[in-house]
Every structure is written in structure tokens, then in C-alpha cells.
Length: 348
Ligand SMILES: Nc1ncnc2c1ncn2[C@@H]1O[C@H](COP(=O)(O)OP(=O)(O)OP(=O)(O)O)[C@@H](O)[C@H]1O
Image (cartoon, rainbow, N blue to C red):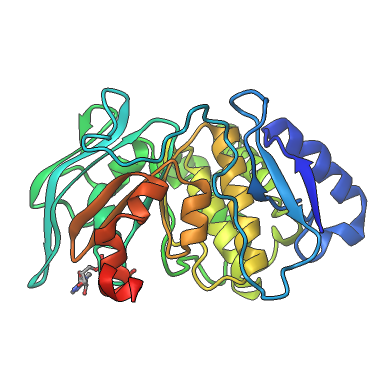
């Protein structure tokens, strides 16, 4: 029923697979180069970058979603017990210190503190209206915090403009697909490069060699991202005609085109079916490995959160409910109560 497959996502591993797919025109239609999806995992004796997954050959009859209990990154002695003070220390790439934010008359964030370590996937979880999007809008400068501080790589972000924050290495995707309709997939991804573009009207007008050189460099970077996320089959399609799962992948590609060190994914699997979810998980993990990213992941799919996040923060009504290793955080009694109305009710 289950086949086990070793899977080591590296940038180098992508290219032969893509070229093989490109050589076979039939393989370029639909979801090109179908990834061997990873479901389930177990610790094994590989290196730290080793990943081992089970691949389902037959979907469970119940249609139940089976995800890895961990994302197979071998963490010897992993301990999911939540301890007070179990937060990042000096190696934090992003830190929020008592951040508060009002939106209209609503206090959408109340004294939120968290620290995200370099290289981890950090989950942000909470019911609808909890304040998750407000939190990432605070980090990215759209809704700067009214109280508290946000630091990235040791530098304060309060008051920094969103485009300057993007230049500092933070990129994001949006909860609702926010692509430029009427433009091709390639041109949408190219938009992610705008923070590096220094257009000169004269150079562009006369198509001078340095304008060409600049554009070629940006297009080369975009082609690398298209390779990585296997979007070559739809690269010239208008973005509005491709399926939602691919549109979400294009959003991811546009964010990656900005060459971030810190990537924020706002519900990248919203509205997706199981197969599309599995694809996007794989691409997120591969991008992380290939591009050395730290990721903040907002998701309602708890199976995904527990599968791939190292640690998680759970908020409700703008307040922190729990923070720490993922399983411990999402199983915290306060979290269970917030989601299903009380521990006693749940036990009954
Ligand atoms: N532009 C806005 N105008 C008025 N209220 C807002 C606005 N943006 C957010 N809010 C309010 O702030 C609170 C937090 O909203 P937010 O969108 O951050 O929640 P969320 O956790 O991202 O929810 P969801 O999972 O539904 O996206 C909610 O009460 C919401 O109604």
C-alpha cells in the first residue's frame, strides 16, 4: 500500500528532472514533472539535510489526509514538549517584541512577541480574525506596529517603508491570489525583480546595451525560478487562465524572484485540493533548501503545519495563546479551547 522513497531536495536535483520533462512534450502539459509527493516520514540515519518520505500509491478510502508527523528533517532527540522560555535566542533572524496594532477600532494585535530562528519554518496559526494577516502586515510595513518593535537581522523595521523592507530581504505571498491579470506568468514573476530594477528612460528608449544587459540578468534569474518551481509549461500563459494551484505557485515564484532571505507565506494552500496542497508543500520545501530561506507560514491546514513547521505561534483575538515546538503549541489546552470551545467540551 505504501512505497517509501528517499527524497533529497537540492537545486541540482531539479535540473535533470526538468530537462527530462522538457524532452518529453507530453510531460509538459498539466502539472509538469509530477513530483513524488512526500507523505509520512521517519527518522533515519542520513545527514541533516536528508529527507525521507512515504509516497502513497493508493489514497486512503476515507479520503483522509495523511501528512508526515514531522517533515523528516532529522532532528536527533527532538523534543516537542513546550517549556516556558522555549523561544529563539541570539540566532533569531526576526524578532517581535510586544507588538500591538489597532485596525480601525479593533485591537488586532495585543502585545505579541516572537522570535524566529534563521533556517527554520515557523508556523503562525489561529482561527479566522485572529490577527495573522495583521501580524505579517506589521512585519512587512503595511500596518506598522503602534507599540512594540520588530527587528530583522538585528535592524529595526518600525517605520521602514514596505519596499525598503522588501529590499532588506523579506518577501511575501498573499492570502488571496494577487497576480497581475492580463500579464503572462513570466511577466508576473519578473515583477518580483522590480526592487532591483534601476530603469533609465534614455537607456530603455534607445535599447542601449546596458539596458539590455540589465534586463537579461533579471530574465535569467526569473528563468532559474521557473525551473525550480517547474512552471515552464505555463510560462507564456496569461496568468488568469491557469488553475488556482499554479497561480499560487506563480505567487511563490514572484516572491522568490525578489531573492529574499525571509519568506512569508500567507495561506499558500487556501482553496487547494489535496493534490495541489501536496505540490505546493514540496515546492516550498525545495525552495527553502535551494535558496537557504527562513519561512513564516500561515496556514489553516493543521496537517501541513505539524508536518513541516519546526515551531509555531498560535494567536487568537490578537493575543498569543501558545508558542514553541509545533506539536506542543497546537496541542496546548488554550489552543484546543480556542478552536473547539473548551477542553471539557472536547473530552465529553
Ligand atoms: N482593513 C481592516 N479594517 C477593519 N478591520 C480589520 C481590517 N483588517 C483586519 N481587521 C480586523 O482585525 C482583526 C484581525 O484580522 P486579520 O485579517 O489579521 O485576521 P486573520 O487571522 O488573518 O484572519 P483570516 O484567517 O480570516 O485571514 C479582525 O477582527 C479583522 O476584522
